[in-house]
Image 1 (cartoon, rainbow, N blue to C red):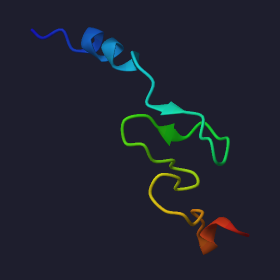
Image 2 (image 1 turned 120 degrees about the vertical axis):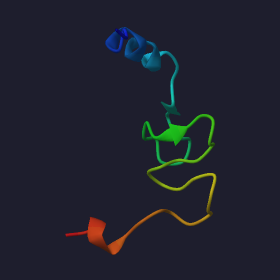
Image 3 (image 1 turned 90 degrees about the horizontal axis):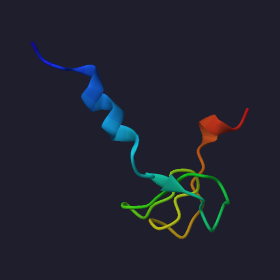
Length: 54
């Protein structure tokens, strides 16, 4: 029989995202060095899509 669930608790150790210096949201990926909200670190243009605006 395998232990299963106890190993999953080790996944929440470090931080994947920190605050972005450009947009201020908690979406800057530490190891990838890219902000998922504003695209800082990947492009000089802000990340925005037409489907975001109602």
